[in-house]
View 1 (cartoon, one colour):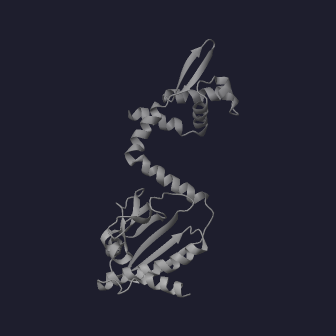
View 2 (cartoon, one colour; view 1 turned 135 degrees about the horizontal axis):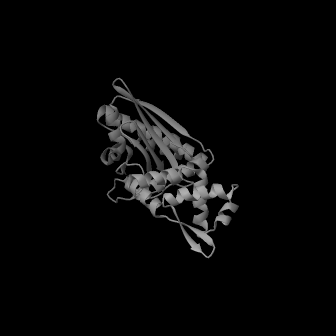
Length: 262
């Protein structure tokens, strides 16, 4: 088995051989002449590459009259997928890949950064950010997830309804220092409207610096909302961890009153 895998990896390492496999994937059962037509190489060179692919059992040949037809054999590639991909939960990998591609393709949007210092340990701050009970206390909503990369998370009401007013997907989780997730509508995944929130927890003696970075904000109203929302939420978190109590009034309600008065 190990020798077979070695031959497969060796065969796939060459870009010309991968192009040959791609050509057969598009149109299976090609002659040597047709395969040579898509490559700027001599028939002898292409034949040598085909021999390597055949040795790795990645292709098979069938004679039809005076011609030899080459066919892609997907079995060894499927075995690679089962051994190296399936065990890492392919749905999660697909989600993370979609998020990565969206991030690379999207134009730059506004970013909001907020920094606060808290008298607490990194472990305690991490717990506060990921505990459904603690987020329910200082945020007014419970953040619910298993906090594994690729997993969904929900921003659930604490009124007993269980309804979620927001959520997204966990992108990175490195307890107790770094948490990255998309932040959008409840049940939303990666997409043009998905913003990204990063919590960075940096210890310094017996305090921590907590940095909240909210990226890919879509509109000016979004920037205004998070500019008021994050300081309010973090103030409540800081009060809870340092005094054991949240602020006497929800700070985001003050912002709402000020907007209404304005």
